[in-house]
Length: 459
Image 1: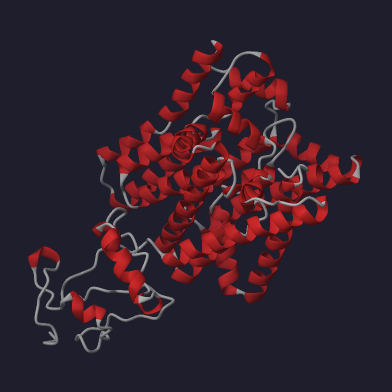
Image 2 (image 1 turned 60 degrees about the horizontal axis):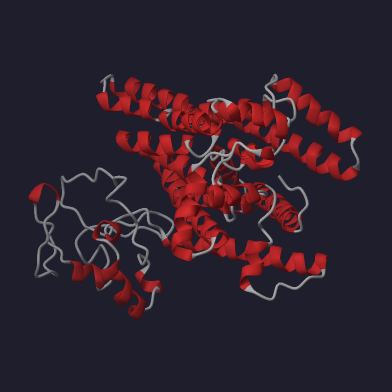
């Protein structure tokens, strides 16, 4: 063991590792400390040396949060000195609070909002003189309903009884944030902003379990530039739902089953397709049982997941007197009724050829393209990813294609996170595939975002 350190720090099982934190801050290499801890920047960093015979069991969900200022050589000393004592110890010792992911999310978010605001001014010939105007142009379509729910809650009177189709968790959080920010729209952007950062971090950590650091970062990149990814940043519940869903799967992989139940229940309180988490978790439990042949009573925590949907049914009962009022409202106001998947696919395909050009493209071609993307990705998941991910894909695809009038499929596809793992696997192996997917994503992201802020239908 190296004698470069005068202080010892306790390692696992009370043993002394023989290196002080000052050695590490001084930038000494693994060779100088008597061990090989330095890896390439593309790989994972081992900041704490280990004795021989001590095996690293890997980071846990709670303690292994990656330090925001982990890249010490790239962060000014003044910022490190200010931030480090203010970050909780569990975060400072962690491994998933990755500043690269946070910066990536914030950078893409800024570019999307900037581009959409500029396109609005160019095509509408209207100025946006205030910062508030730059976010107000996003208050379109379902965002108006989310805002109404946050401000006034549910009602069973008049046409606003349609709002019962909206799940309550996102509006509740926006309402809570409005007490702090004194503005519902600002609160909505803060909620979605925090949730989008969480979704990026959680997807990175989930992908890192089975794949390389490069592939994990690439999967986050494809999430952020997905053609409908602007919904992650505005007053929609996509970012919240995605963060809860990916967090639930990550907790299951880390065997944090109480957390699995809580996150799954919250996801069911956010979107109807949160129910698909339950069968996916059953498959995950079965796969873990096959690997160990040992029963764990903590697996029963997955039974908590559907309780979130149960709370939503009780809310329906309280507001309207009917636990399933959301089904009738969806049929009456949004033309949604259950049908076979091939009926929905056939209807979308026919619209490509029978409607005027705008509808043919936005309600026909794009809906059909993303339906096919979901179907192909689901098949690929069964072949190359975990069965639980494939169940999540298949359940969602069946849910949003099994209606008579297929609508908003590009937006619904956004939360199918295994797609980004598949994209990343292809992109890491072949540069031309990465260029192709990136080009397609960015072009259609620009098109859809510019249409949306101008009030045109864009899912």
